[in-house]
Amino acid sequence: MEKTERHWIEPGPGIAAGLRDLPKSINVKTASAGLVAAIFGCSGPALIVIGAAGAGNLTNGQTVAWLLAIYGFGGLISLVMALHYKMPVTGAYSIPGAALVAGSLTVFSFDQAVGAFIMAGVIVFVLGITGLIGRVMRWLPMPIVMAMIAGALIRFGTGAVTAIGTLPIVVGATVLAFFLSMRLTRVVPPVLSALIVGLIAVWATGSFGTAEAGISFVMPEFTAPRFTLDAFLAIALPLAILVVGAENAQAIGVLQAESYRPPINAMTVISGVGGVLAGLLGGHNANIAGPMTAICSSDQAGEDKQGRYAATVVNGLLFAAFGIFAGLLVPLILMLPAPLIGAVAGLAMINVLLMAFQSAFTRNAGYQIGAFVALVVAMSNISILGISAPFWALVAGAVVSMLVERPSVVREQATPQTA
Image (cartoon, rainbow, N blue to C red; front, top):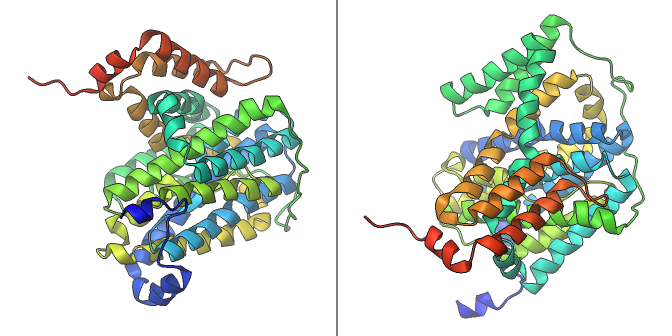
């Protein structure tokens, strides 16, 4: 046991063992769980990325390259991790990260953002190989990180509401379908139901737009990175913290809840490698993903926990295929009216926002004042010295906590009260 702990990358059964046992592990439940996870990741979250690309006035080719990077490498991460560890460690990309980038692209040029994507990957990689994650998280408490995420992403929730006023019939039907699906079935993801009903409503009302590229295949257009200090502070640091503190942390918690022993260092290292490689193609980060890991590791993927890694393999193949054919799919998606994209993106963020608020403001977690400061600073969308609000939210939250929330107070808050 002790010997295993000394490995900076945890050993696993190996890809050959994963491939050998894969045929007997694939069944209806593992395949359906992998499909559901892929549908979730390729619907609402893809619209968030496309919306971010629109905020930065990216060309269709740059948008295609972004999707190719995050879905292609996200799928590859799933295949490598699932087969090597025979565990449902599922790759995708940072959905909150895409939302953060959307705000930053109104301030920074895309080549600066691409440089920041690569730098974020390097940060995550270094955290993985040096084992610094624990120290960073002790210095920057999780409630403050989660409050920053909640404040930065709350605009997606309000955007879904304001979209109703712009396109009431289409968006109203979309929102209603989402909550009815959540109430009536657990088989179909609510965001998929919402998207399908939204598409039907768009067709019925004749609200489709016209994509500039029609339905022709769009080739990816790669962007040379430019490295700047401002983009490092405003994009790279918050993005790296999101990958480690939100995506990886959530995936680790999910796997531990299902009685797995997740390879924490390896998950961080491959998230860093995925960040660098995706950045080179113009994508913001390919990494271990919490929501997709939750679906593939749940009992939806079958009773045999040892075989659930097959769900991640299915998910990885579908993700990679989506990335490869993004050039054909993006022009079709861009024909959707903007209010529908905004509404579906906002609905897709509900669970992320709930997780962020619950993690930030659970009394037992402590750091409540610092978390509140981080929340309101992130919501303000303030920019100081060219650096956007998420960075200043982390700084302000941490400073306020150090000033007013003494360690003894935090410990007292975090200790359950007895009657």
